[in-house]
Image 1 (cartoon, rainbow, N blue to C red):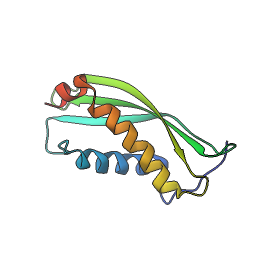
Image 2 (image 1 turned 60 degrees about the vertical axis):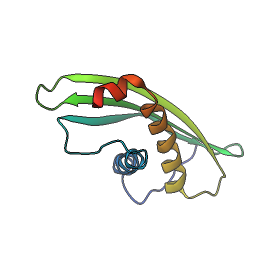
Image 3 (image 1 turned 120 degrees about the vertical axis):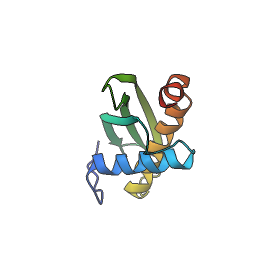
Image 4 (image 1 turned 135 degrees about the vertical axis):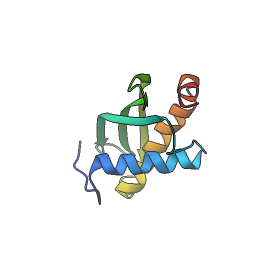
Length: 114
């Protein structure tokens, strides 16, 4: 495993990447009675081999803002392979995009945000 340097805190970087990825796949962001939150459960970069493997596991939660009841929760783990000298921000964004693709393919998530 290795250390990486990001321009911003990992939580903020993932949050911003999730928001951008959701907007790209046309999932409404903001202005809803439901809120999406998440928790990074695992984040690692194994660059001992070529290509480097980025592992990201996020627990997503959809909460009804009025009742504060969790109406959806699920963890998604992805493994992104990137060249060793790929930009950290690009590799992290790619891993988040894979995670969001898994999220929006989950019918339970789609039902929860409607």
